[in-house]
Image (cartoon, rainbow, N blue to C red; front, side):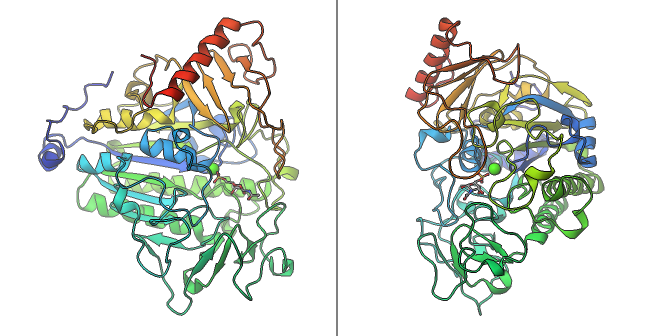
Length: 514
Ligand code: NG6
Ligand code: CA
């Protein structure tokens, strides 16, 4: 049940946005801080000792630390798609890890979390990592002109984003549908098929990899002394410098917050850091401060970004009226393709905490993520909360919070669990779905992984257990979080029930257990 914090809107919600705003000045700002590949165990509140995370510690002490929150998928694109649309990404076959020249995956006709906030009178922004495609058609973008489809078509008033990931071309920021700082003397060309004549690559010109060398993949175009996935030419002064990415992203986030506060408009900010995804190449001021090398430094840089957001809320005097949600898009990975010594220096640090598997896995390490929620006076402060929750439910939950009315068919798979998110209702969701190359069902007690024919280890680079097995797996999470003892044969009735949930949710968009 939604808490009765705000009056629900009338049927003509969008047209009455302004009136509503005046009636309910307390509609909180909402900031989702989404880290990239940050593991359950990667920050101090979750047990990390080899890296300091003072800003996150502060957020946790002023809010609630959740210990059973799951991303929808174990990689970025499907995880983010699901969060922003409230539809399971696996319902579509074009939501796998996107190339930097993928067309916009969320279609303008879809109703997104940003549409929801915008129609409720919020100013909306997406800042940082995007990874959900841009422009009309894959491979056909003209990066030298305004893109025909961009985030303004799916509910964002403002965006300053990276098209995909820092390891994928094009290595430029996109601001309001155009390359930011566009350099007319260096037109931009992008291909994921072939190189442009005369352009060096990591494979052929390793001597030009002056900043980071690859360990697997990442041997195509070289930008800023780092090999990337995909080929690009041009960019000139628009090209990012990896060491400044966190600064740029954070500065634009703070700028957006200040403008919204100045206009006295409630805002929704989807703030996605590049940290701690590869290539990990943080600014000098974060280097060498912990024993884990670049991966630890990237965590420290992430923490700095969080701190800047919190300080800015304070200085604008809006911290009490802002719901801050911090989480990650998928589980952690050490060596994800660059020679940054993450494996060699990890020591006793456990990126997934007590969980098995990593990013990419069907095991819990793939989708188990940190989640900290702060809203002074509304969300219990300094509490730990073990309620089972999934990112899929955040759209309907936040909609309920702000009294949004979603059009029929919007956010089909998202359940209103706002009481869970605010820590006022400790009833677990009966089950959630996790996606790797197969599906898993997680309940408060059990974890069921569908049978799947695939290698038990990733075969193309990272040393990671996939969690795939030719027969069903069932783990009793109340006995051990480590997914080591498959008890499927001893519990056929449980397996049968969980298989049925997987079958039904697959068969029907919007199946929620009824
Ligand atoms: C993989 C990349 C990896 C990372 C991942 C996506 C190679 C060898 N590896 O294909 O480095 O970019 O895709 O990560 O290319 S995610 O967090 O955005 O999903
Ligand atoms: Ca990720």
